[in-house]
Image 1: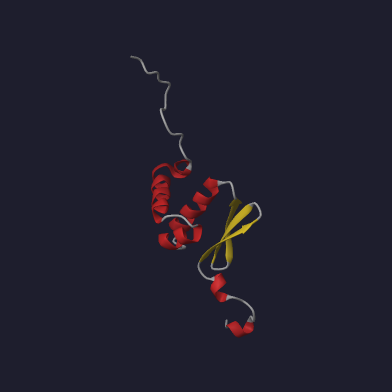
Image 2: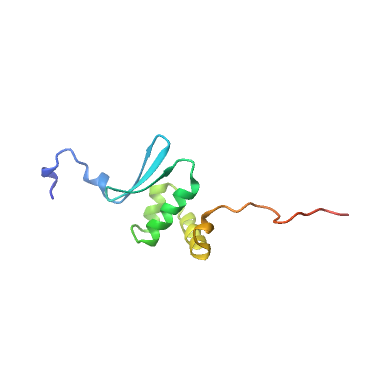
Length: 105
């Protein structure tokens, strides 16, 4: 296919990983095709999309980090957590003490 057959089509827009936001939804496109969609407020949905893109080899970690606007170390952390605990690893755990505690003199 050549650009002459599709005038006005931006081929650069179709290549690689792109994130589009439409109202309350975000969507990942890989080489121009819709891949994953989630709500803007759904942090786990975004992390799931990131892990899937990496695990399936659809993009380099650096490219995925750039597309999502996050640091590459976050990609590494998501992958490590996912590989260790599955989808549960992508959910933030509450910080602080895990059990009841009391300070005594």
